[in-house]
Length: 217
Image 1 (cartoon, rainbow, N blue to C red):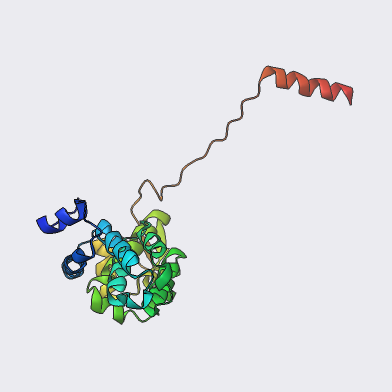
Image 2 (cartoon, helix red, strand yellow):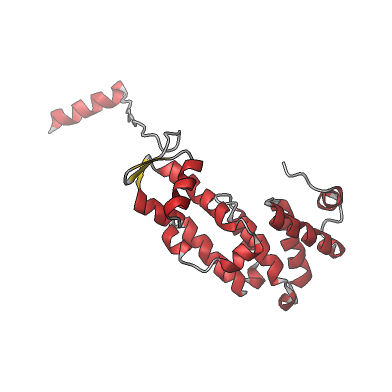
């Protein structure tokens, strides 16, 4: 549960939540979240919707730097669908450079093209949200923990964009055990191999029909 300041909570939960006079206060709270490692998806949606209402006839007035902050916070909330939900409210601003670049990063993450992701220039986004890379590694680590029991060190290093001591420290923080060229992932409900038993129930009436057909042949 997000602990909002009283003035922000009154805006979000009040009847004037879409009043454009509140935009400055909401954007100020968004800046605090970027600095303090917090995330309030309802706030993000509200700001985008308020911008949509205000600028749908004047899209050139959209605040690109605010949109970028919202999309960055949504990106590090993966696998939640927040990023795509934000895009639905940005139809008029889809051409903005920051929207296009962040959308490309989102697609790389959803396609598990992690090595390609780390080859991208992430500086503009880490300047906005200082813990951006750390949060993205947590997103990737969650997918890895769901998908693998063991993974090659070189492959995992590429997935995380880390090498040497930084790689070892990250693995230790996830309680992953490095043994030579292999990293072992603890067994969990997602990566545990499960035996699938397929059982088909055949009624006696169906069996007699099959026997009857065979006698006719």
